[in-house]
Image (cartoon, rainbow, N blue to C red):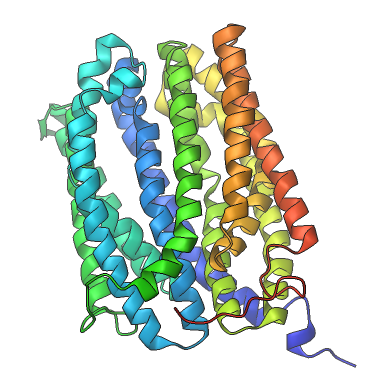
Amino acid sequence: MRKKTSDRIFDRSMLLTILALAWPTMLEQLMQTAVQYIDTAMVGSLGTQATAAVGSTGTINWLIGSTISAVGVGFLSYIAKAYGAKDQAAVKRAVAQAVLLTCLLGVFFTLLTVSLSGVIPVWMQVDPAIQNMASTYFLILYLPMLPRSASIIFGTVLRSAGDTKSPMKIGLLVNLVNVVLNFLLIYPVRQIKIASLHVTMWGAGLGVIGAAIASAIAFTVGGICIAWVLWKHPMISPRGQKFAPDMEILRPCMKVAFPNMLQRFGTSLGYVAFAAMINSLGEVSTAAHTIANTVESLFYIPGFGMQTAAATLAGNAYGANDGKRMKRLASMFIPLETVLMIGSGTCLFLVAPALMGLFSSHDAVITLGATVLRMVAVSEPFYGFSIIIEGLMMGVGKTKAPFVYNIIGMWLIRIVGTFICTQVLGLGLIFAWACMIAHNLLLFVLFLVCYVRGVWNPLHPTDKTPYTAG
């Protein structure tokens, strides 16, 4: 007798829903990564010092961006659950509160980054020869923190209600603006060849500063556009809602967001410490690390695209109190994610030297970067499993365990290990990345135990906590 759809592990309609949610996010991230590639290549053409100046404070971007993203996760969990429960009033109230926090965070981080722009390169142990360049780049890049905050939080809000296409379209626009302005602002006036014609192309010749201005303008365009889309959205627009603090909404959102914020802040601070130790190894290691990070980000796209879909659908299932659907989600996401990450890891291993060569002509940088990329390629399927389980847990509001897992992995394995290898034993970048891989493998083990025990699932018989709005 044929099983009913609700009893089957493989559900074609669910697979189509997963792919419909995941592909716009993947495409958006792909375009963002493509622009990072182009940015890195354009800046890389200016020399190793320019690449190091841009990359040396990049981990601060993770630190700030991940803190803001954590607030988005709190709203994602709440809105996805309310959406699954068909509680439209709770959805709209939550969106209004997301607007309020976006404004507060945007102003706060603008003041913070502008005031610290002169000392951050010093804290990051940037080579004194490029500290002024790195400081100016950082200052310009972080002036538009309000629109950047809007892009992060409003994008998450739209995705939590199943709209992944709007953030994708705006992301494409942002990337286009960034690339065009890079082309015009980085390089000086020059001759370019179009077919058989030689054309004089205007250029501002601003170098690294031009790259910062281009990115700042692109971020501003993106923030304005996504705010407009959210305001006009037919389902989740905050129009008509009160924007004063509403603790019935903020309390459950922050209960989810706070552990995730601590996790992201702690791990991002770890990235800062990690990068600072690598910066101390010299220009070649800093450039190889910066370029390798950019290259590697392309191959994590399938994982993080699927994580967004997992979080949204898990929240919907939790809101609908549908335990069977929750189990089917995990049984479909895990093998799909594993296959995708095996494929991306294999590709990374094969093309690592060629991709490094796109961004640098320095043989030592290419060789070192390709080596560490091939090392990390082997660990990608394990990391993919971890981020899917973490995505499911974010969707249902279980953020405490991922916080503990990530902090243990980052600080006890990656940071302590890297400190011993680079600062005590005098070893190089390869050993630092080996510590990073050990961190990823530990996360795999911890999330695997969490999955097998069923503690990730609030509708599991041993952990049944039905959803209630507010």
